[in-house]
Amino acid sequence: MHPHQPLSAPDSYAAHATDLTKVYGTGDTRVVALDAVTVGFVRGQFTAIMGPSGSGKSTLMHCMAGLDSPSFGSIRLGDTETGSLNDRQLTRLRRDRIGFVFQAFNLLPTLNALENITLPMDIAGREPERAWLESIIQTVGLADRLGHRPAQLSGGQQQRVAVARALAGRPDIVFADEPTGNLDSRSGAEILDFLRGSVSALGQTVVMVTHDPVAASYADRVVFLADGRIVDELHAPTAEAVLERMGRLTPAHQV
Ligand SMILES: Nc1ncnc2c1ncn2[C@@H]1O[C@H](COP(=O)(O)OP(=O)(O)OP(=O)(O)O)[C@@H](O)[C@H]1O
Image 1 (cartoon, helix red, strand yellow):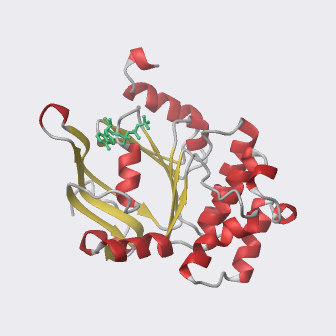
Image 2 (tube, helix red, strand yellow; image 1 turned 180 degrees about the vertical axis):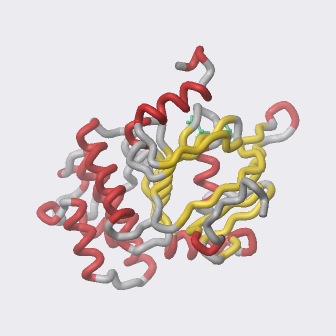
């Protein structure tokens, strides 16, 4: 066994990338956004991805979530090699097996909270599992706001709707891109508590890009990117430890 090989068996990964490389542009504008990244996200774990601006965090998440295609390397979601799928299959895989939470909540303004939460399943023609849906709505604390439209909800409540929507279809993995970026610290803490709870209590797998060491401290593991490579990793992180590792990666003039 290779000395750096992780101990977990491959099938315990909800998602895994091998030698994932992403090159944008050609000639003078060529950028290697990801440089042979090999990383796995273990089922039932909460992982934060951190790194300086431009280090490849969003690119990694977009490639893993099937929103962008790698230049080289392979990605597995569960036991599916996504490189072998055509566009239609990839769309279906995203819809059925991945939950997304983005900084802009992407809620539909004309639908109420409950309709927004179940929209992906409605589009897919899937019946929500009632008990599961109810446990999410309870956990996220939206039971008395289900009839409200997004404009009638606070930013934090809107983001909770977005998180509930991402979880409602019981996806294999949830990808969250700066889910607390637009929120005040109290609303942010609620979202992080909820994501944490979805992992600890419901067994979800969550991968979150963040710039915030406090947000990262809710995760089980933090993966640090710099210049398109994984350069460090922390388990059971504290905000202080994350901050200290970030300091090592960030050039002094950017701090
Ligand atoms: N569509 C694109 N075309 C060309 N270059 C791109 C494209 N998307 C990203 N890049 C480049 O790839 C590199 C990685 O970008 P990425 O958005 O993944 O970084 P990031 O770590 O998420 O940054 P930030 O923290 O600022 O959001 C950057 O140098 C960026 O300029």
